[in-house]
Amino acid sequence: MSDALEDLKQAIVEAGQSLFERGLTGGSSGNISVRVGDEWLVTPTNSSLGRLSTSEVSHLDGEGQLLAGKPPSKELALHQAFLSRRPQDRAVVHLHSTYATAWACLSHPDDLDVLPPLTPYSIMRLGKVALLPYRRPGDARMAEDITRLAAGHRAVLLANHGPLVAGRDLATAMSAIEELEETARLALVLRGEQPRLLDSAQIQELETTFAERK
Image 1 (cartoon, rainbow, N blue to C red):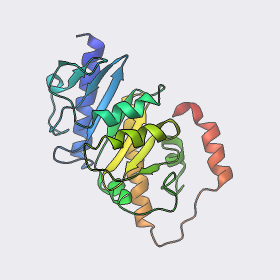
Image 2: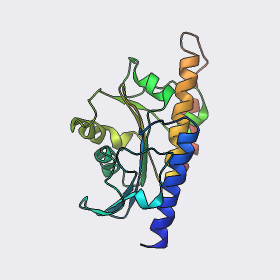
Image 3: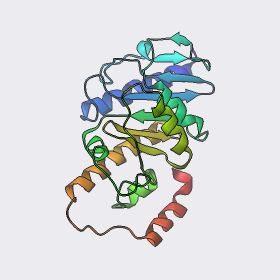
Image 4: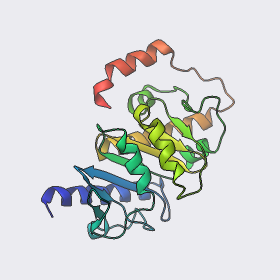
């Protein structure tokens, strides 16, 4: 295996450990993928992100055949559906983090834009976050739901399940899902209050200024 693939495996292992140690994913929840050309590196099914080794990371070819490592996460189809509509992106992170999942358990007026514009960083790193309908884990319709919205949303919440974020690389996807968790936390802390929100002109300025940095 090339040094580049080994480096990416190590990056996935370190990202998983960081998420686990900070309490952003527990047990065997959460999964990470990186697309490398037509191939995929994915965290394995029924594994803890806090206790992975590079030899366990799943390496699949473009047809989904396992080339090395353990069998991939059963939610790989969600990652593939997400990136099928986002050719500019190469990585996906999915968690069951507390605050984002809590926000995904609530009803919202607009399921295509469920997070309030509280900080510039949520606009810069997330854009509009969509809420997808509840499906049982493993339901094929989850991938169909993501495919319909992925082109216009790099961050989604799976109802009563958790966040899923795409990024141009693993570091970008990690930053985005961390920002999603913190924004959901702020939204919950401020729930019932009357926070000052960014207005449309401020949002437009951020989108224009930071468009190339997403």
